[in-house]
Length: 381
Image 1: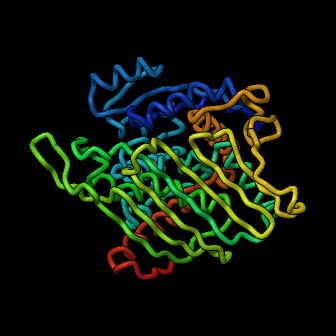
Image 2: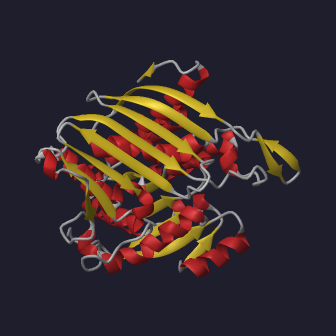
Image 3: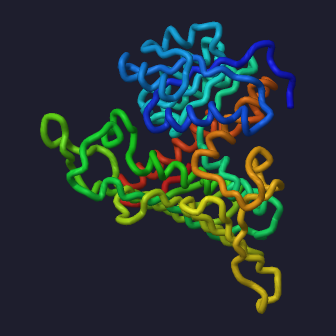
């Protein structure tokens, strides 16, 4: 482990809803799980004074605040963790980097490419000062998916030919489900595509080690309006998305993202097929990875269930004895561990994905949107 700083690293978390709660849990548990520098959960930031004060007590933060600009100027804050809706990411992240802070920003990086470009420019300047600009694609820290990447990188699957990735949920199946910021283009950027489809695209690239070179896409808004505070409001983003992706290594990937898949609660599934083997994964059984070794005699082939809980598996050195499974929240703790080590070393390259990866992903998402607008024609990146 790198040498610890002279004082505990101060964390400021901006946002305290769903993602803010998950990140709070990670900051509470990272020091118990891993040998990392000491931190202090200094301040939780939100717009509503009463609500953020209550959240700070419940989530165990030392202080609360309503003005993020004042918080990023504080000398006792070293890391700014951004868990706000996407339309606020660019302003906060750029200001925090310019204030000399390390930044962890939830995905997707921004609501559009122009915002993402400005964030990357700020991150490049900050990198020269040793600051880390980290993107929170947390599923990279699920041990089974990290192990899948290791198997592909080691050549166990041979040449990758085909990938299938989907992220399916059903929380919008009911047409009477209320309007939210996630259903407005001005606040969310895109719908299922950007929210959960971005995870699937990231895993395609992360596990295969290949980048997306071209796309063909199709989007659908299956419920065009939702009940709002003042009556029906139009839904201005997609409910579901499909795409075919050409990868840089020659593989073809299929993508599906939907909030309208009845019975699917949070199913991120990934299948990778190569000349020498195959993998499959399902987030709803996140401690399992299925592997087929096609180099064995055909009479011995078949998918083998790997329970990814051994100390030799990625990140498991910080957790429980063999067979004691992890949960969804543990990936956030693993992410905090990687960020703290990169920050302490002042080595921005030690953490991935970074803002440049987020910009590349934003361009992929916008290419899928452009393809849909052009009737499903191929868009090259």
